[in-house]
Length: 460
Image (cartoon, rainbow, N blue to C red):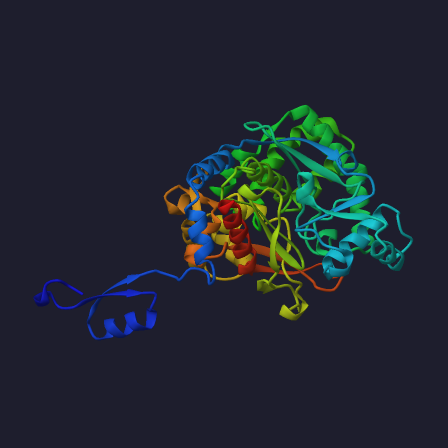
């Protein structure tokens, strides 16, 4: 309250909206303070991690590596060149066929049919259940995959190199929206499209990039943010910029297929999502393996589990149950048709894009629901759990402030705020495809488990 009685009472209200409203209704001056309690059960772990003398310098080093990465698209290659023999990659933390969700099972069945490793759907499911193909997370092989994230040998992948720190990351080519493999569909139209991508699109893009040389993805992403993209669920500007960059070389490198290739890319506003994911992956990988760092370097979902990894804890996964997104649905689909959250595309949020950059993309609310003010509020809140503002990725509507980047698990625990994630929604039944898009809440358990493990390491 005020130190001067004649000035009348002034009350500081902390996290109590109803009390603040009641006092204001009585003409009492209030000073509302935004505050949330720490995540339950984290006090001891927080104290140990915060007392680690390595933490501040470790986080400064890790986040500086992340923000200084310079991802360039350097090529397109067949996945067989990077995959261990007899292995399919998938999104998210490790998972078995028995625990796999409908869309992941559908994508794996489709990959079996694409590779002619099974005669039909039942044969594919039987062989996958028997372990005839090894299933490994994309992240363990310097790769990321949207939604189900399945990568099999005859698919093609973007190759992105960090020109600052030397790392390399890969991501599959984007099929488009609707009934596509990454959403768990595997009908004849899905396989036909994938075969065309194998025979035509992949070789054409490979030849194109051999002509153009490396494409500066950091620069394209920075431009796209200022043109209304957030680089997760809105990539229209970025896809247009990439198309303008590559189109002349496509015509020169593959004159017979140029029209079909350019038509395919032009009709797919999400085409840039996949190189953006590889750019995000190579950037966050630059921040890995800094002892004592509490920086989050990966968030990923497999349709059953949501997992995170920390810079200071190597490749260990910390998981919780994946939630069902809340958003807008296509046609007659509704929440009952939705699978829990799935995909490696949360690597965009991990690198300061996607949900963290929604303030740059007012139009995104038409895709994931909500109001423009919600998008701005979401971005502003993420500054509370991050260590830096990205020097290149800036938001015009916030006075060209850098996007919030560098999620610190200790800040998540201290504020109770969880990362904002926007996402597509896959149908829970294998073969359905996309049913909507929206926002999803990560599980608290993944972050508290990671914090506890970091505390154990700090005490050693």
